[in-house]
Image (cartoon, rainbow, N blue to C red):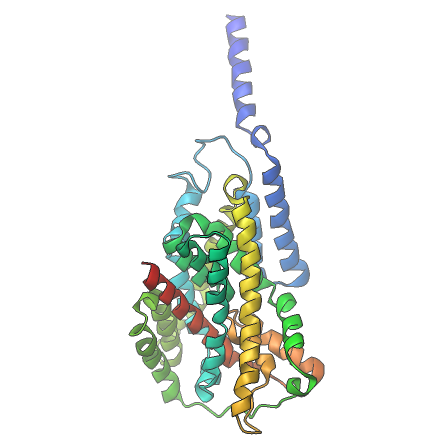
Length: 385
């Protein structure tokens, strides 16, 4: 009887040891955990988009703690808690909710007062379609290439929304790439901006934006939804929520709803989305040659988008009268990283003229970039659906 009890205890101890993370640990898990720690370090030490990188980085650590198959804890295991939370990512539920919050916190006055800045935001979307072609050359299927190209919009929610519909198997790599490059806007964009502009162009002073009336602010989301979604209905989930959130803000009679959308709601969704996106980078599904290609093409897409918008402003200035020209340093803000890209415009501009404040001007193409990337996603989604 004692021998039977001893054997029983030994079997239970062996079973317990086999269930620990140490028994299932692989080098890939360590690599992804270190990447997660790097994200957290960059967020805390250098302030790179901490609201994004801290949840994603910690999610990477969570997602790469090994477990025995069938334990019911992994993000890809049906019925697990993480899998239920990930449902909102893989089914494109979280991105529209984030767009609702973005709309409720965004002031479109800079764009309304100077509508031609919409063209700057539109020009930045060249990066999306240019890298779509490059991704095809790298061997990606058309729907996969569209998901890779959208990284150039520098809009994590849009990238997740499009990829969840067109190439869900690439969701982890695309989402992490998109959010990584959004966080690294202050590192990636300034060298491109300096390379493509002359000292004289960097000193261009733009006229002060005119005052926008309350009526214009209220009418903008209504006109915006009609102009965009009547042409690209596939963008309705994103742009519909964006403009609705903005109407809540500008109407003046739904203050509580607007505060909820831009406060608790977007914070909760950002936490869950960031954590689950990070956890989706399980080493056994994430570490692959394809993920490396996506990271490379994502960077290329982001760089092309920035260069295209800055170059477009230089070209556009050829047709504008003196005193009405656009400082090409705000071209970088044509991507959808709000307000990080606009802050980069301000920071670089002040390096050459400490009295030339570009932030209020850069917010025009920046919010236009949000609309532009959603429209581009709608075009791709409509085409491949």
